[in-house]
Image (cartoon, rainbow, N blue to C red; front, top):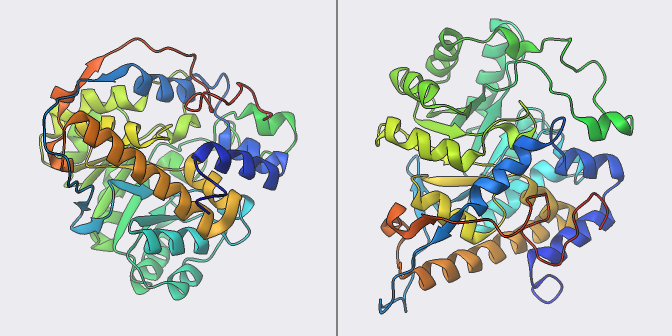
Length: 357
């Protein structure tokens, strides 16, 4: 894999060759004008580094703990709905890769595979993400299954009151039938009170995914949430939202160590991970990059993707003059002017803007 995929650019090109147009649009696209998706990338590009020199960086440690569980790098695999559209055995392959490499997969409740199938295939540490499946009895049934399958934490996605207008799938007739802004999903009636019931019934460490403002972060803290997951659904929810790294900067002062912080959104390189951690995130999650790795080569392809990201993290830390993740702080970050327009491939200088490679 190392010779076949020296960088993640080759991973992306292989993924494009292996995916049909419907799956590709589903993975890389955003909502309406895709402004939120591009602002995610822009919020990362607006940050520059302030390196320190003459520091002994001959030994580096990229590991952290999240909710007490060890991670080789400060990265988890984001929940991806319809993961079997990207790879036919995607949910199992993602969990396998996470275990082999040393991170954690967060399995989506709509991944395309039964949670028991994924749990039986691999007994490694796994988190579970849920959408609200229906009434309280259906919720309890799902939570009972999650606990029986030994998932270690529960993430509730809260930014999905309606299915957004995703024009790439609409253009090609591949949008999920029956979903759209006119049809409220189960999440439309969700409240903080229902979240409390879910959290208390599960008894698991609890992550709330989709927090975008300091106001909601403060409420989440008041409700005893263990992890605040800053996200705008990868730019697939509300269009014209802020970039997630801008959200992170605003939310960190409200949290002040009262909960752990995870952030996602166009985080595609190790330097992106370092920026997010320096600005206050405990860990980041990858969705699009995870999908590309799986499409390129299943578990082995994803593991290679993570290896490349690890190498980039090591490089960024060493050249910043940092030897451990907990040494990163905003002192190493400054505002900077972006040098290229943000789009889904702008992280790689040889990749053209647009949908075809």
